[in-house]
Length: 139
Image 1 (cartoon, helix red, strand yellow):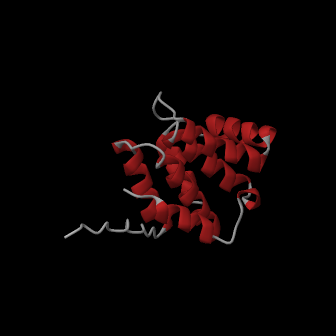
Image 2 (cartoon, helix red, strand yellow; image 1 turned 90 degrees about the vertical axis):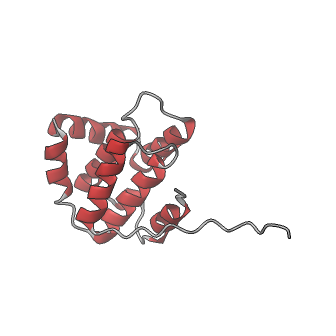
Protein backbone atom coordinates (compact mmCIF):
# COMPACT_ATOMS: atom_id res chain seq x y z
CA UNK A 1 0.00 0.00 0.00
CA UNK A 2 1.32 3.44 -0.90
CA UNK A 3 1.18 5.97 1.88
CA UNK A 4 1.66 9.01 -0.30
CA UNK A 5 -1.98 9.86 0.33
CA UNK A 6 -1.43 9.59 4.05
CA UNK A 7 1.32 12.17 3.88
CA UNK A 8 -1.05 14.36 1.90
CA UNK A 9 -3.74 13.89 4.57
CA UNK A 10 -1.35 14.88 7.35
CA UNK A 11 -0.17 17.89 5.36
CA UNK A 12 -3.71 19.08 4.55
CA UNK A 13 -4.70 19.29 8.20
CA UNK A 14 -4.60 22.90 9.35
CA UNK A 15 -2.89 21.94 12.59
CA UNK A 16 0.67 21.36 13.75
CA UNK A 17 1.82 18.67 16.19
CA UNK A 18 2.73 21.39 18.68
CA UNK A 19 -0.95 22.48 18.78
CA UNK A 20 -2.20 19.15 20.15
CA UNK A 21 -3.54 19.29 23.70
CA UNK A 22 -2.38 16.89 26.43
CA UNK A 23 -4.95 14.17 25.67
CA UNK A 24 -4.31 14.41 21.94
CA UNK A 25 -0.56 14.11 22.53
CA UNK A 26 -1.18 11.08 24.75
CA UNK A 27 -3.27 9.51 21.98
CA UNK A 28 -0.55 10.15 19.40
CA UNK A 29 2.36 8.96 21.53
CA UNK A 30 0.39 5.90 22.67
CA UNK A 31 -0.56 4.97 19.12
CA UNK A 32 3.02 5.36 17.94
CA UNK A 33 4.14 3.22 20.85
CA UNK A 34 1.63 0.51 19.97
CA UNK A 35 2.12 0.58 16.20
CA UNK A 36 5.78 1.47 15.62
CA UNK A 37 7.30 -0.21 18.65
CA UNK A 38 5.06 -3.28 18.59
CA UNK A 39 7.83 -5.35 17.10
CA UNK A 40 11.45 -5.54 18.11
CA UNK A 41 12.74 -4.47 14.71
CA UNK A 42 12.41 -0.67 14.50
CA UNK A 43 13.80 0.86 11.31
CA UNK A 44 15.73 4.09 10.97
CA UNK A 45 12.78 5.57 9.10
CA UNK A 46 10.41 4.69 11.95
CA UNK A 47 12.81 6.24 14.45
CA UNK A 48 12.90 9.43 12.38
CA UNK A 49 9.12 9.72 12.80
CA UNK A 50 9.50 9.40 16.56
CA UNK A 51 12.23 12.03 16.49
CA UNK A 52 9.77 14.39 14.79
CA UNK A 53 7.44 13.96 17.77
CA UNK A 54 10.29 14.59 20.21
CA UNK A 55 11.16 17.76 18.27
CA UNK A 56 7.53 18.93 18.28
CA UNK A 57 6.87 18.23 21.98
CA UNK A 58 10.39 18.70 23.38
CA UNK A 59 12.29 15.85 25.02
CA UNK A 60 10.73 16.38 28.45
CA UNK A 61 7.26 16.83 26.98
CA UNK A 62 7.54 13.67 24.90
CA UNK A 63 8.89 11.62 27.81
CA UNK A 64 6.23 12.86 30.25
CA UNK A 65 3.52 12.06 27.68
CA UNK A 66 4.96 8.59 27.15
CA UNK A 67 5.14 8.06 30.92
CA UNK A 68 1.52 9.21 31.28
CA UNK A 69 0.42 6.79 28.55
CA UNK A 70 2.26 3.85 30.11
CA UNK A 71 0.92 4.65 33.60
CA UNK A 72 -2.64 5.40 32.55
CA UNK A 73 -3.33 2.52 30.16
CA UNK A 74 -2.63 -1.03 31.24
CA UNK A 75 -4.42 -2.65 28.30
CA UNK A 76 -5.54 -1.93 24.77
CA UNK A 77 -9.26 -1.83 25.68
CA UNK A 78 -8.80 1.05 28.12
CA UNK A 79 -6.69 2.90 25.56
CA UNK A 80 -9.35 2.40 22.88
CA UNK A 81 -11.98 3.78 25.26
CA UNK A 82 -9.76 6.83 25.75
CA UNK A 83 -9.23 7.26 22.00
CA UNK A 84 -13.01 7.56 21.59
CA UNK A 85 -12.85 10.76 23.71
CA UNK A 86 -10.57 12.61 21.27
CA UNK A 87 -13.01 15.00 19.68
CA UNK A 88 -11.33 17.64 17.51
CA UNK A 89 -11.50 16.57 13.86
CA UNK A 90 -8.27 18.34 12.88
CA UNK A 91 -6.46 16.66 15.77
CA UNK A 92 -7.89 13.25 14.84
CA UNK A 93 -6.81 13.69 11.22
CA UNK A 94 -3.33 14.84 12.22
CA UNK A 95 -2.87 12.03 14.75
CA UNK A 96 -4.14 9.36 12.37
CA UNK A 97 -2.08 10.62 9.43
CA UNK A 98 1.05 10.87 11.56
CA UNK A 99 0.65 7.36 12.99
CA UNK A 100 -0.19 5.81 9.64
CA UNK A 101 2.77 7.50 7.99
CA UNK A 102 5.08 6.23 10.75
CA UNK A 103 3.57 2.74 10.53
CA UNK A 104 3.92 2.76 6.76
CA UNK A 105 7.65 2.98 7.02
CA UNK A 106 7.58 -0.81 7.29
CA UNK A 107 4.89 -3.37 6.60
CA UNK A 108 1.95 -3.04 8.97
CA UNK A 109 1.33 -6.26 10.85
CA UNK A 110 -2.17 -7.74 11.31
CA UNK A 111 -2.69 -6.48 14.88
CA UNK A 112 -1.50 -2.99 13.90
CA UNK A 113 -3.73 -2.97 10.82
CA UNK A 114 -6.74 -3.99 12.92
CA UNK A 115 -6.09 -1.15 15.39
CA UNK A 116 -5.67 1.41 12.59
CA UNK A 117 -8.79 0.16 10.79
CA UNK A 118 -10.77 0.42 14.04
CA UNK A 119 -9.41 3.91 14.66
CA UNK A 120 -10.29 5.10 11.14
CA UNK A 121 -13.87 3.88 11.62
CA UNK A 122 -14.17 5.23 15.17
CA UNK A 123 -12.80 8.65 14.27
CA UNK A 124 -14.47 8.72 10.86
CA UNK A 125 -11.15 9.45 9.18
CA UNK A 126 -11.14 9.25 5.42
CA UNK A 127 -7.82 8.26 3.95
CA UNK A 128 -7.35 8.67 0.26
CA UNK A 129 -4.39 6.80 -1.08
CA UNK A 130 -2.99 8.29 -4.23
CA UNK A 131 -2.63 5.87 -7.07
CA UNK A 132 0.88 5.10 -8.15
CA UNK A 133 1.50 6.47 -11.64
CA UNK A 134 1.19 3.65 -14.12
CA UNK A 135 4.31 3.07 -16.10
CA UNK A 136 3.70 2.92 -19.77
CA UNK A 137 4.92 -0.18 -21.45
CA UNK A 138 6.69 0.28 -24.75
CA UNK A 139 4.88 -1.20 -27.71
